[in-house]
Length: 121
Length: 108
Image 1 (spheres, each protein chain N blue to C red):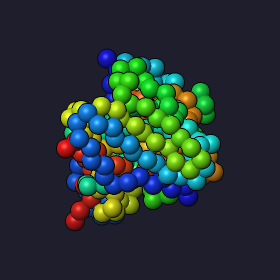
Image 2 (image 1 turned 180 degrees about the vertical axis):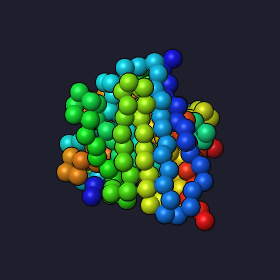
Image 3 (image 1 turned 120 degrees about the horizontal axis):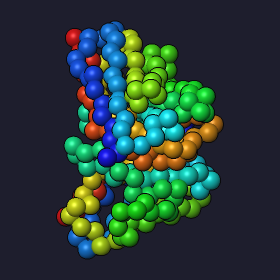
Image 4 (image 1 turned 45 degrees about the horizontal axis):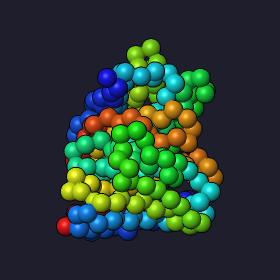
């Protein structure tokens, strides 16, 4: 079964850090360009960033609101994607989804169910 | 940065046609993807590359685009189509994915 399962969400204070993960199964993870997308309560989908497949250099791109605070990485040996979130702000409160695409501009064909991150004092 | 503009809401009676627009500068030159997102579920691609329908998506869903507007059309709308719909493009000038603000489809 093709699946993405996020984990690691929780409550964190402003200025704090949190790392969330996304475990893939049922498809060739090493071929995937992996993305993080978030949805704040009552808001729409917002792209957070992506990491290219390792074959395509594994480089990353980030949306402006998270650039220099968030870091996306992958461990292909464990079929796992990570999002390290530093200096968290209240506005980072959201449901965080991981998703997979298989070419640079192809749609996100596979999505997880999301993990909730709440930033509050 | 590139902006995609969607109407916040569209309402339609069952059996009628819903039209959801997505406005963007020269959007016709970009690959537009459409997602259906129901509460508590993961988003699902309903239209790829402007007009391509993935396997498993009903023929009632179709997509098109003109110079500055992409359109998702849902024919013979059913109660199960009620969801939020998002358009998405890759903005190669900024190396960013961009989502539209989303349109809530209500089936009356």
